[in-house]
Length: 188
Image 1 (cartoon, rainbow, N blue to C red):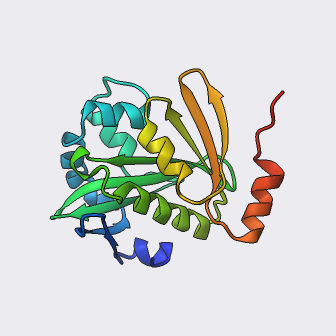
Image 2: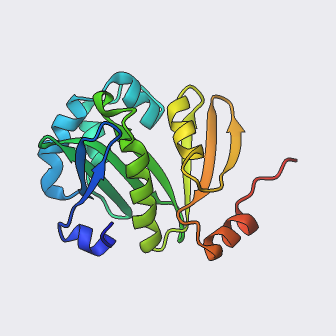
Image 3: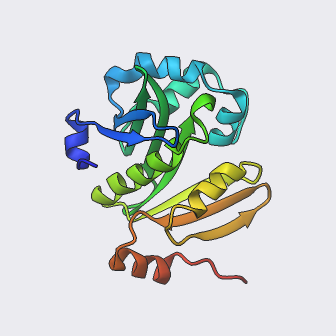
């Protein structure tokens, strides 16, 4: 995967899905906003709910939430000339960020979410973010399993109807030590 700076400069990387189809992954740019509208129009209510933990979000609010903004980086997956997936992180601290993922229904279950999450973790790590937090609805078992199966150690905190999962953006020894020292939730 190219560096974050080269991605911002327009470089793409191919991501092969389980069915052999290829998506191009690159940084979301302001010029993508019209295509982002078509992406939003193709999302199911369940996908929107699971990503934002609320229903009834207006199209305009979704576009605003997904559009490029300071402190956030988004990667898009483009297949057959349209955006089919988006992963993003927004900084919540100097080295931490909340991570999110949104895939249109017809591309779910093909490995696109896993690939985008791995790539956004790599981009975040290159950008100085060492820890991700994902807030996931308990019913979103696919996302919970996706995070658990990435290969990163995880720390989980259960809340009513939600699970907060923290995981490092890299499995290098320094990041792992930081995770073990600072981010393990303890009972009590």
